[in-house]
Image 1: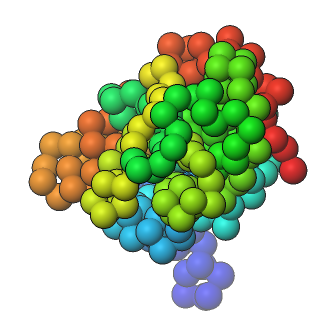
Image 2: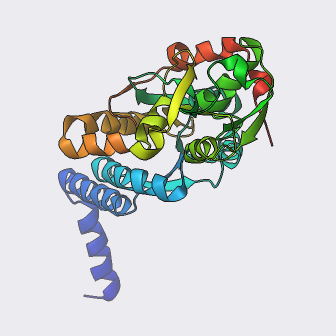
Image 3: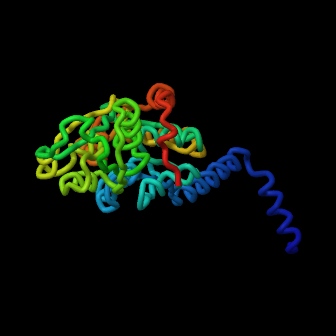
Length: 292
């Protein structure tokens, strides 16, 4: 038999293979393609507002993101900006896929890039103004003309909302000193480099006892919804849902609860922009937002 005849016969044999075998081959090829895809992890960037030092944030967030990676199958790359203004510039350009940010950042991110809040802690955020316990400042009026330390201009409860309330409600004049972190705020007050300092309840509670014991809360803001985890709209809905469910599920086991405690979100719940953060638009504090 000639080569041409043998080749023709082979082609005819393949042409007449049963349909169920062809379907089986299709399934196998599909499985191989999906397996190849599964070997390539999907990576998402996850930015965290730098309320604390980069070392502290990495210590708190890296283990949690590792657990989320294990639970979801996605890979999360932790992004920590060197300052809050740089963090803001990044999310205003839509760079991070996911981010953990303050409540008014959620408003800014929604308007600029349509970021959507996924979850937050159930406990509200309170901005607090601290002074030295043994200091001369006993009322807000005593701070008129003094220097007040804040972590950053747009740190919501600690600075943005606080400055608006002190200026418009308490009608006092003061010099703002932005010192980058909450920990720096406390130390400026203790060292008498500032008469008072703006912070938030969760950050103050996290501080070491020997620092807290030297401070007195002089004033606190009304409560607002706490810091959310948000997602950029380019992230597919099923991925957003998977990340949200994985976060919420952390509260169901000891390891997960410990991780949530470290990021100051011990009791996570689903978040809604309309009910949680849209009301902040009515505060009309845009004029206190500082952009660089």
